[in-house]
Length: 165
Image (cartoon, rainbow, N blue to C red; front, side, top):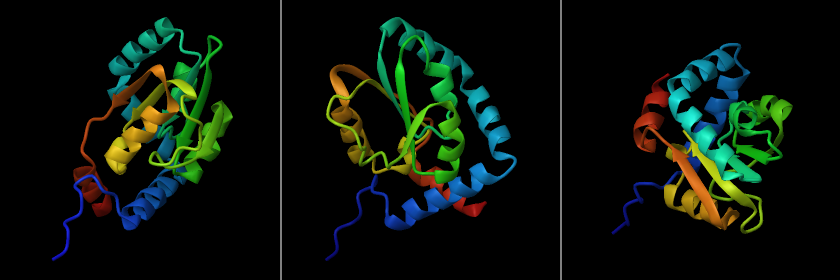
């Protein structure tokens, strides 16, 4: 008898799909336009988060799933060291213009324990093995820090929808 897959498990096939989809998405001329429209939907939440981050005096911040780097710009400054990670090489090529970036999966972050005061995950958790990604976020976040999530959807639904495009 086989053991059913965990509902939040991400297969290697899903990883390749997500990497390939976002590499094509960010390379297209429409990628930045789509990114702006998508970010506009979230503008009130981003303003609230930006206010909180500014008041928190967080000096070290990690953005998981940084895409083109909008959060690096939005949350950077005020002496804050901000780093972005993403699985898409194409997105990171553009994000690099806005700050420090690294290619990494949320389940395996290349940082030491407690390296960040804030770990921010937005619209990326749905593409991961959630338990592993959250454990990594907690690991790289200082024990006195905060892990902030902005996630509108569950992975299986959005991945199925994106595969139809």
